[in-house]
Image (cartoon, rainbow, N blue to C red):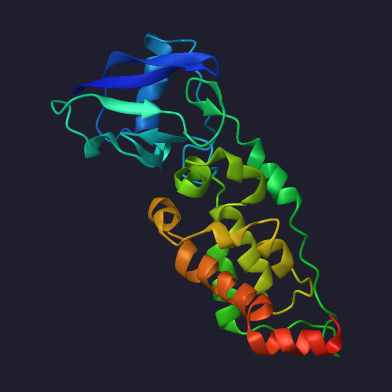
Length: 248
């Protein structure tokens, strides 16, 4: 079995450092397997968050060689044992709790601000009808596993902590787009997207789409259409004149 040099962050909110460990890896293993081996043999107090180990819970998010990834979906075969240390660090965007575990509660506070789905009345026969393309669009958005890698890589949050209270981030633009594009939903969330979620701060670098483990086209299918809807409602001159005439 090849032996890998793992450079793992150890510390808490008060500070920390990277420590190096030599760990053997079996064929087919992923980064999370090696971290578990490390816990069992050399660093029993290493803190790491994980759950399903199948790429569906989003718990084991970290930064591997500087790139946000799921540890359970990053195979050791991607790395050359002779090429140098593999660096594993916590997500930079969120406050550190300990070692590889960060406080992602900011995301859950944002989620509370988004009004839930509220359907219109059913058809006369008591059923709801939707076009297949609307169903397909919603299913793409609902693939999100809330790993928050898109939140982690978004430079609007990552490099500017002051934006966190007023910028929801990519994960929640996906949620807002899912609801706003649903043909049966009756709630207008565009004002929330414009003000509380701060969609205007996004400058469409597509970094969020690049790290999504579910391959959701966050920028093209959620953020840009949502920006267009906000622009149509609030910045279209004809609509602006119409609102003025109606006294709105």
